[in-house]
Length: 176
Image (cartoon, rainbow, N blue to C red):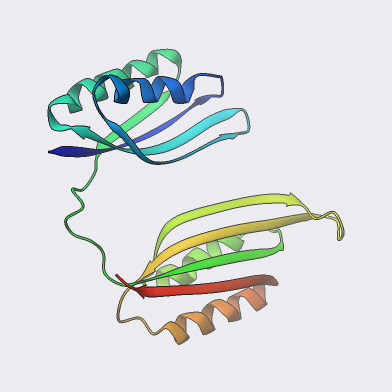
Protein backbone atom coordinates (compact mmCIF):
# COMPACT_ATOMS: atom_id res chain seq x y z
CA UNK A 1 0.00 0.00 0.00
CA UNK A 2 1.41 3.44 -0.94
CA UNK A 3 2.48 5.80 1.83
CA UNK A 4 2.06 9.57 1.58
CA UNK A 5 5.23 11.52 2.32
CA UNK A 6 5.37 15.28 2.70
CA UNK A 7 8.73 16.92 2.04
CA UNK A 8 9.62 20.54 2.73
CA UNK A 9 12.92 21.97 1.61
CA UNK A 10 14.77 25.25 1.44
CA UNK A 11 18.24 26.16 0.24
CA UNK A 12 20.23 28.35 -2.09
CA UNK A 13 18.59 28.38 -5.52
CA UNK A 14 20.50 26.56 -8.25
CA UNK A 15 19.73 24.35 -11.24
CA UNK A 16 18.96 20.69 -10.55
CA UNK A 17 17.14 20.87 -7.20
CA UNK A 18 13.83 19.53 -8.49
CA UNK A 19 15.65 16.84 -10.45
CA UNK A 20 17.51 15.75 -7.31
CA UNK A 21 14.29 15.44 -5.32
CA UNK A 22 12.44 13.65 -8.12
CA UNK A 23 15.27 11.18 -8.80
CA UNK A 24 14.67 9.18 -5.63
CA UNK A 25 10.97 8.90 -6.41
CA UNK A 26 11.71 7.67 -9.93
CA UNK A 27 14.27 5.10 -8.74
CA UNK A 28 12.02 3.70 -6.00
CA UNK A 29 8.68 3.71 -7.87
CA UNK A 30 7.22 6.72 -6.08
CA UNK A 31 4.88 9.26 -7.60
CA UNK A 32 5.09 13.07 -7.43
CA UNK A 33 1.52 13.94 -6.42
CA UNK A 34 1.31 17.62 -5.51
CA UNK A 35 3.81 20.42 -5.00
CA UNK A 36 4.41 24.13 -4.62
CA UNK A 37 7.93 25.32 -5.24
CA UNK A 38 9.41 28.74 -5.91
CA UNK A 39 12.57 30.76 -6.02
CA UNK A 40 12.27 33.53 -3.43
CA UNK A 41 15.01 36.07 -2.70
CA UNK A 42 17.75 33.76 -3.97
CA UNK A 43 16.44 30.76 -2.03
CA UNK A 44 14.53 27.81 -3.42
CA UNK A 45 11.68 26.68 -1.19
CA UNK A 46 9.26 23.88 -1.78
CA UNK A 47 6.72 21.51 -0.40
CA UNK A 48 5.86 18.20 -2.02
CA UNK A 49 3.41 15.39 -1.40
CA UNK A 50 4.49 12.07 -2.90
CA UNK A 51 3.12 8.56 -2.72
CA UNK A 52 5.75 5.89 -2.21
CA UNK A 53 5.44 2.09 -2.09
CA UNK A 54 5.52 0.98 1.55
CA UNK A 55 8.71 -1.02 1.13
CA UNK A 56 10.54 2.00 -0.40
CA UNK A 57 9.68 4.66 2.20
CA UNK A 58 12.91 4.36 4.19
CA UNK A 59 15.05 4.44 1.03
CA UNK A 60 13.31 7.55 -0.32
CA UNK A 61 13.63 9.36 3.02
CA UNK A 62 17.31 8.37 3.23
CA UNK A 63 17.93 9.70 -0.31
CA UNK A 64 16.17 12.98 0.45
CA UNK A 65 18.18 13.40 3.67
CA UNK A 66 21.39 13.08 1.61
CA UNK A 67 20.39 16.35 -0.08
CA UNK A 68 21.23 18.08 3.21
CA UNK A 69 24.89 17.46 2.38
CA UNK A 70 24.37 19.85 -0.57
CA UNK A 71 23.09 22.62 1.70
CA UNK A 72 19.35 21.99 1.60
CA UNK A 73 17.32 21.92 4.78
CA UNK A 74 14.94 18.98 4.56
CA UNK A 75 11.92 17.94 6.64
CA UNK A 76 10.04 14.75 5.76
CA UNK A 77 6.82 13.65 7.44
CA UNK A 78 4.47 10.76 6.78
CA UNK A 79 1.11 12.11 5.66
CA UNK A 80 -2.37 10.90 6.54
CA UNK A 81 -3.71 7.95 4.62
CA UNK A 82 -6.55 10.08 3.22
CA UNK A 83 -9.25 7.99 4.88
CA UNK A 84 -10.71 10.78 6.99
CA UNK A 85 -11.72 13.62 4.67
CA UNK A 86 -12.54 16.96 6.23
CA UNK A 87 -16.18 17.93 5.95
CA UNK A 88 -17.44 21.34 5.06
CA UNK A 89 -17.64 23.72 2.17
CA UNK A 90 -14.80 25.33 0.31
CA UNK A 91 -14.27 28.93 -0.58
CA UNK A 92 -11.85 30.79 -2.78
CA UNK A 93 -10.89 34.34 -1.92
CA UNK A 94 -9.05 36.75 -4.17
CA UNK A 95 -7.67 39.88 -2.53
CA UNK A 96 -6.22 42.84 -4.41
CA UNK A 97 -5.26 46.18 -2.91
CA UNK A 98 -2.60 48.69 -2.01
CA UNK A 99 -0.02 46.75 0.00
CA UNK A 100 0.60 47.53 3.65
CA UNK A 101 1.66 45.45 6.65
CA UNK A 102 -0.99 43.26 8.26
CA UNK A 103 -3.39 42.48 5.40
CA UNK A 104 -2.71 38.73 5.34
CA UNK A 105 -2.77 38.54 9.14
CA UNK A 106 -6.09 40.36 9.43
CA UNK A 107 -7.76 38.12 6.84
CA UNK A 108 -6.24 34.95 8.37
CA UNK A 109 -7.40 36.09 11.82
CA UNK A 110 -10.99 36.56 10.60
CA UNK A 111 -10.95 33.13 8.94
CA UNK A 112 -9.59 31.52 12.12
CA UNK A 113 -12.29 33.19 14.24
CA UNK A 114 -14.86 31.43 12.05
CA UNK A 115 -13.00 28.06 12.28
CA UNK A 116 -12.07 28.24 8.60
CA UNK A 117 -8.92 26.32 7.67
CA UNK A 118 -6.61 27.77 5.02
CA UNK A 119 -5.82 25.02 2.51
CA UNK A 120 -3.67 27.11 0.21
CA UNK A 121 -2.38 30.67 0.16
CA UNK A 122 -0.59 32.32 -2.75
CA UNK A 123 0.44 35.95 -2.68
CA UNK A 124 2.68 38.44 -4.41
CA UNK A 125 3.44 42.12 -4.18
CA UNK A 126 3.78 43.86 -7.54
CA UNK A 127 4.32 47.38 -8.70
CA UNK A 128 1.09 49.35 -9.04
CA UNK A 129 2.23 51.12 -12.20
CA UNK A 130 -0.76 53.41 -12.70
CA UNK A 131 -1.20 54.44 -9.05
CA UNK A 132 2.38 54.09 -7.85
CA UNK A 133 3.31 52.09 -4.78
CA UNK A 134 2.92 48.37 -4.30
CA UNK A 135 -0.10 46.17 -4.93
CA UNK A 136 -0.86 42.97 -3.00
CA UNK A 137 -2.51 40.12 -4.88
CA UNK A 138 -3.49 37.07 -2.84
CA UNK A 139 -5.52 33.94 -3.46
CA UNK A 140 -6.75 31.82 -0.57
CA UNK A 141 -8.41 28.42 -0.84
CA UNK A 142 -10.08 27.44 2.43
CA UNK A 143 -12.33 24.86 4.08
CA UNK A 144 -15.20 26.11 6.22
CA UNK A 145 -17.08 23.91 8.71
CA UNK A 146 -20.46 22.62 7.52
CA UNK A 147 -22.32 24.47 10.25
CA UNK A 148 -20.78 27.89 9.50
CA UNK A 149 -23.24 30.44 8.14
CA UNK A 150 -21.86 31.61 4.80
CA UNK A 151 -23.54 34.99 5.01
CA UNK A 152 -22.01 35.75 8.42
CA UNK A 153 -18.52 34.92 7.15
CA UNK A 154 -19.08 36.88 3.95
CA UNK A 155 -20.32 39.93 5.88
CA UNK A 156 -17.31 39.86 8.22
CA UNK A 157 -14.84 39.47 5.35
CA UNK A 158 -16.47 42.24 3.32
CA UNK A 159 -16.39 44.58 6.34
CA UNK A 160 -12.71 43.76 6.81
CA UNK A 161 -11.99 44.34 3.10
CA UNK A 162 -13.58 47.79 3.37
CA UNK A 163 -11.50 48.55 6.47
CA UNK A 164 -8.31 47.38 4.74
CA UNK A 165 -9.28 49.13 1.50
CA UNK A 166 -8.81 46.00 -0.63
CA UNK A 167 -11.02 44.34 -3.21
CA UNK A 168 -12.28 40.91 -2.16
CA UNK A 169 -13.80 38.38 -4.54
CA UNK A 170 -15.51 35.34 -3.03
CA UNK A 171 -16.52 31.99 -4.54
CA UNK A 172 -17.89 29.08 -2.54
CA UNK A 173 -18.37 25.43 -3.44
CA UNK A 174 -20.59 22.62 -2.24
CA UNK A 175 -19.94 20.60 0.88
CA UNK A 176 -17.50 17.68 0.67
